Length: 97
Image 1: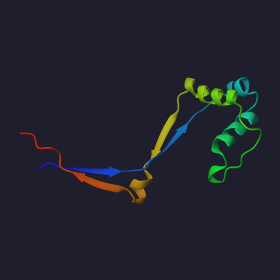
Image 2: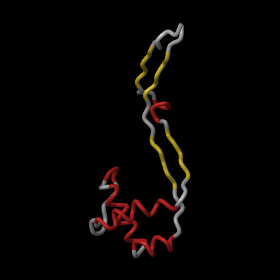
Image 3: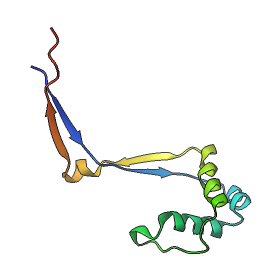
Image 4: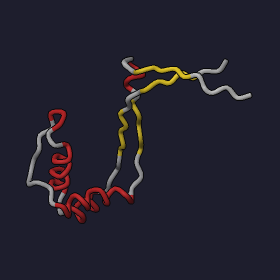
């Protein structure tokens, strides 16, 4: 008999960019403004302080488009796999004759 064990995990994915400072300055005006935009994207979550003026619609669009031309390194932390706390379900697939 075949059956499936399904584990339902949560994962935190970290995308690491190495961006040229000159391109940041040309796009956002300064490194400081780019850091302020990032602070607003965090919205004060996880103890991060929000700094600077709120993000404009134009800056928000630029922010998302800015990363398109750059590659990144990705690291996944399957933290429920390390710490437990994930759901497990079982299924019996339809029998094939």
